[in-house]
Image 1 (cartoon, rainbow, N blue to C red):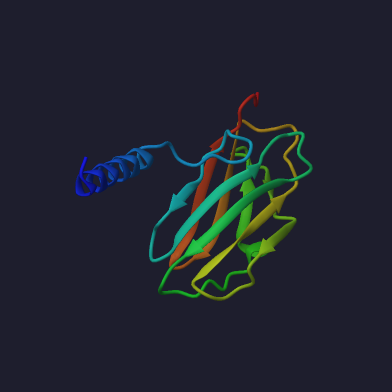
Image 2: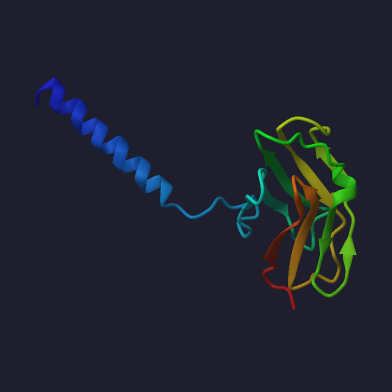
Length: 145
């Protein structure tokens, strides 16, 4: 096989491999049950990935990432985030472990007290990101009543 044919074969494998990778399911959390969700309303992309939602966990954690090239991310995450069970029960975060307010790219982890008993689903709501009054991210909990 000529060198040019070999390089062409490698290029085909790389291109096909790349398209195969794009067909993979969304990334899963460390627990393996909760996919990342992205909300791209307005001019800010917000991606949330549950890291721990087990009733046995000491805390429920959500990785949150903000990306924009227009609006600085100045919100106080302790004030604008709430976790809801859909039945009126809400929890405010215990902590924000991440970047301070400011900048166009910001990430961190919101920490909540686990809801006991575990609900059927949880919704993380984040208010006032960009010009969007509320963004909601919902996950069904496996094994919940």
